[in-house]
Length: 121
Image (cartoon, rainbow, N blue to C red; front, side, top):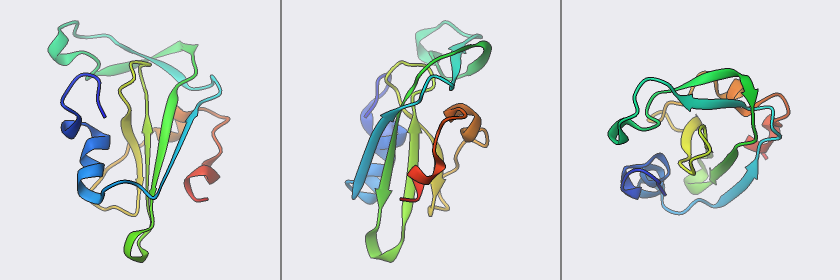
């Protein structure tokens, strides 16, 4: 579940350990209206892609996954997004789980063409 660290230390790994396999996984790619992210302040391998910043002039398609859980009558939804096209998907949205915090700019990151109903269907 990770590119730069042990899978159990990744966002997807943490969710998998806490809740098990999702009841549904939707894999998709943004339309190209998502902002391009790049690492600007540190080139060391230890901090690679830890601090991406927006490159507002460039746009590009990004992979994402939506994990859905329906266990015990509690609906949980997680949106993982590949901010840097590195294959390392990060949690940017969580619903139904008070222990997880998403990115307040998740809608901006997903781009204008993202259909939010994908999170609730």
